[in-house]
Length: 146
Image (cartoon, rainbow, N blue to C red; front, top):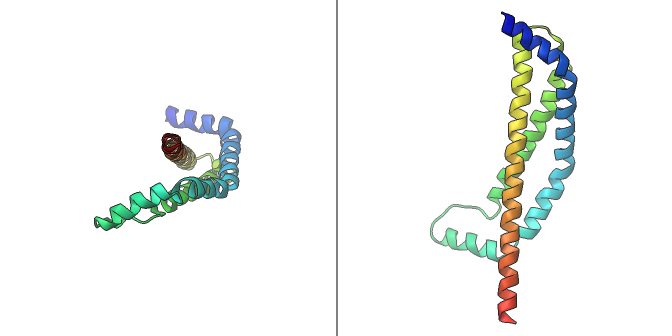
């Protein structure tokens, strides 16, 4: 019982900070989502090399779509945004209930939203890395043909 009262006390002290972080992360991702997706589409997914790679995979019988990874990434970002806003909303609504289950729910929701944001950040890095690798290959190919 002491642990639950400490958890409630912890949440009461950090409820505002958790609200602000959830709202800020959700707002930032929401404002950047279109830019990130458009840039990734233009710089990587629309490139001839990527399109050729997918065409070859499709010829070999793979059911992969040209933009399926980008669509999945878009869904991941949307889930991260929605959960960040839900987490923020829960902090200023359910979070005021001094019940261990309400506090646990709010903290778990915040944790899950942070994990999704971390996964989204990881995939942004992976996509940028792929785009840079592709640009490097193009530059080397262009330089060697000159």
